[in-house]
Image (cartoon, rainbow, N blue to C red; front, top):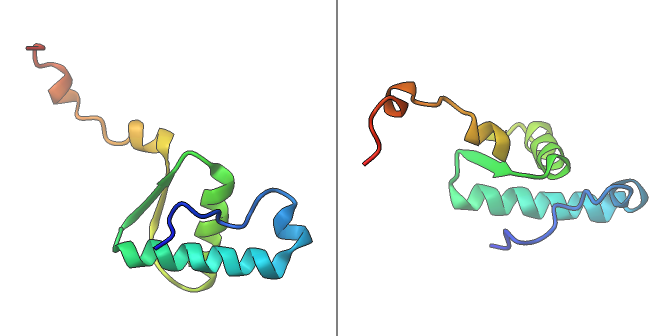
Length: 85
């Protein structure tokens, strides 16, 4: 896979070069699918919206989360009450 490749959004790039952008996000989506991941996490909202939109348009399921959501997700408060060792 090529998970390090750009998703093809790039601000105005997706508007100015829609065919290339669509090909790039399709490759990105397929690379994500090939990992078997259930959740896609990124710190870039543009990437998340672009890749998430492609998953939605193609009727494929994956949970999309921003890294800030992951850090704030279901904090186990009981664990926080335990003394630090």
